Image (cartoon, rainbow over all chains, first blue to last red; front, side):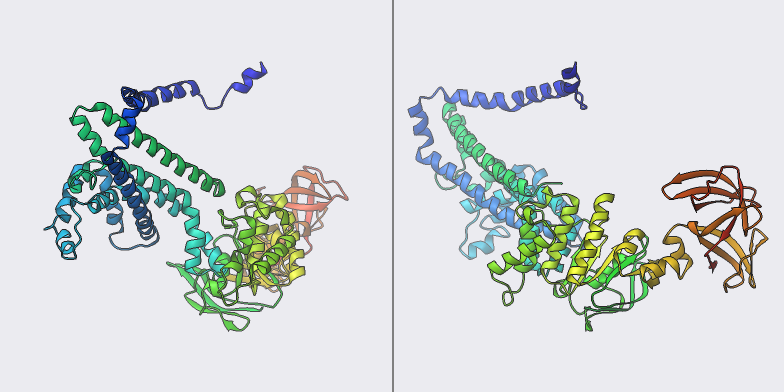
Length: 278
Length: 349
């Protein structure tokens, strides 16, 4: 009798929701991923190894992960500055700017790619002056980098914004009354309180950039070993009917992405434990 | 350090939060700003701290104009109602913060900082919590850490905004006594804001009663309780019986019937009679200024509290009185009531 009472939860529907959750996650995520892994088993270990360590694959992975990381870093810094301005100051057009941040979310990525390519092409509005300085953006890795910054920025802004809004202004007043100048207040009090949100925003922008395809392929030029991203290489292998090759690269991307996200998650947990939500 | 506030005006839109406030605080005082919410007490405290700026007026700390300096330059300790501790720092680092952000020229070395933080944690009796994070502390502990943090910068004055407001009754009582004894120990000029009269009367040397942006009375706890200067103070501090009366010359009338008590110099016209519950003497019918029927009696501790329906008001005016338990009162009994001490204030407007 007593165990029956103890087991009864005040929140009904555990069985139903848990069942739906597991089924849904299996159908949508786990089964497709498992199929991906199964497909790679058509390859022998040697074949697998030679595909993923081929020069073209390694370069594509390096470009994808390296530029994504760099773009996420830029987004982290610029996103934080944008959030600060949007949250802390009242200026004409603030709501408009706030809405503009969401455009990369909503815009079809191919449209973004075409627009960026036009802008940064040798005769484009930004491309022409840059070309005079000797900087070529479109059809180079710099173009990829810019496309990745474009699609990643809203992730940082939208994760950090609510946390900064909720940050108690008394914290800053306390810092001021203790003699801290603005510099100390920002770097010792405000930013450390935002760390968990900043990490989340960084992880999302990073993950988004790794998976980005549509906007990048228009501006990248797609030269093997120079400006060819891993997702494009996968598509190329698929169009050549080399399905196992494609899945092998996909598996490497998947595992690498998973490890990175896992690492960022751990960092976040560690930061969260120190700054618990009360 | 002495504080002198002169002619402070502060408006939020058309609402006057502070309306020409003057206040002098002597060195080493422990002063309470007491008033209901919206009385301007917190605004005044924040202006002294440099967290808000007045529209006009002056603030001087130790004779020096404070308004030309920001909060970070005033060396004023401030304790917030909701602690405002830095969540990402340990208790130790919270207390050390003020020392670590000092300009390099006067910043102490690490060993000195550590020793000072240790001393402060000892002072608030929480040295054993040095390595915890604020979220792991109880409310009372957090507020004591907030106080230690404010004291770390050796503040010239200490300001506390409803410091015990977020704590439960028992902890609040303990902390009150503790704050008093701490003040006796360190003697820093302190002002604390509260809406709790008991807290103000129990802790402060002097009490400033505020209402609607103005100071109603300044005095020792005894003075504001025994000799309230205005009707507001009488009603706000301590429990009072309030009766609407008419004053004509030296005669006082309630509902048209004369009460045989002198008007104590109150101006003729409509007025209010204030009597403390325990200042109403109960006697046999026909011997006092007022008469009424006891409706209900509750006894607790040394007193009995009776609800009395006054005669001549058709039972509409019911007052509560506190009587000693030397004679048990009975419901239904007709008694007379004689105010021993009372004040009459002319009704304004």
